[in-house]
Length: 603
View 1 (cartoon, rainbow, N blue to C red):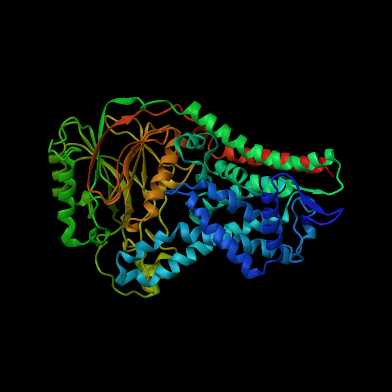
View 2 (tube, one colour):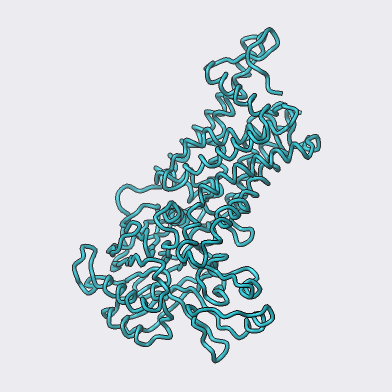
């Protein structure tokens, strides 16, 4: 039970910074006696505030308050008002916790996650307003059900943590490991959505970001919980003593406060030290003979797939490609590669000879166009138009016709100065409800469709993701849209790439935090792999990112233009780029084993 401050001999009194000690004790006492509604509101607010630690705000110090609140909510989940505070419970006593205690811990975790994901993913609703007449009715469900579902991962983590709660600061270590595992699961289960993984709290500024190349974003999740939860939890645990304790006993009881704060500071110091060692001064050396032109057309998403806009949009890409960063027309003088965004041409270019001829006319000899584009593989003589209006089908008709439909792919293609296709990559990781529907045939038969409105949905490419050979480029890896948010799944083949090309279209999400978060996650992927990323987005943020996550050049949101840039050389492969998530798994094992052995030694 948490000892209360004040009182006569035998009761607990604060030592050290009295105002802080009294305040923390008061918070824990309040949480222990709070109603279920109050606990839910506090957890929700803490989760909502925690989103400020993510891009584009990077106000990570807020977690110094919100993470301890989550620890104390789990501490006080026993309805009797008792709080663990490290005095009882643990790995070998989990059967003592009844279902009500675990449920209260799970509810606290769920509301924390609900606040975190509602405020972190609110921008998803923007996509349903692009064609509001068709999709706006789904907006309330999208902005509530997705966060509610993702919050179940936080709830499960809180339940698991409470069931295995360890004494003292070891419970913070346990919580950190469990949240690391939970975030890994969130990135993999049901196709995965590792958006705003907690580890991103330790990826700004660039010197901190370098540790992503050491332990990956899931390893940084563990370190984030430790760094931000330990100080106040340690003060809360360590600033209590009995009034009749001898001075030597007081010193021992106060040690956890120092230990927790020093551990937090030590982790930050180690991360900064590694970053300073890893991060080179000045600009990264450039690859000889390569100069890139990144094109950002900033086409309004509502106009993107209108038939009457097809030629206008294609001509816009051609015109932008002929002009330099300053707006002067140079017809690609000195440029070796042009990069257009995802699905840049609102038609099937491989089925449009005139478009291929125009691409050939655009490119001088030796210049290569890398562009996002749609393609089709036919399975019958019919060629349905992906932008055409739908007709009604019964369930049986939809199932029967599925075998007759061609496959559409969302691809990255390379064209030469003759308009010939050199190589391509088909997107592997598709967006649920954006590029395909689960139970596609059935849901289409009752009138539902994914946001892209391609009948039958897109087909996924084949893993492993291939390394492409493009003239004049180092070995190239293609990523389409949100494939850049998946750590450890970027490089899937045996050949290490020298550059990653990420084409995307964040025009669905407006001028919100979503595109900025997406851009930041791409920067972290560059650090994890030690490879530069060329990013072309329809409406931003387009950029050249060096292998240390630094922006060489960029075009901001809602700006139309181009950026001419050199290609930074790849860095020596970092540890995470070589070993992947095995680093994270070993970190979990070491921390859990250390906590378990310490617990055994004190029994």
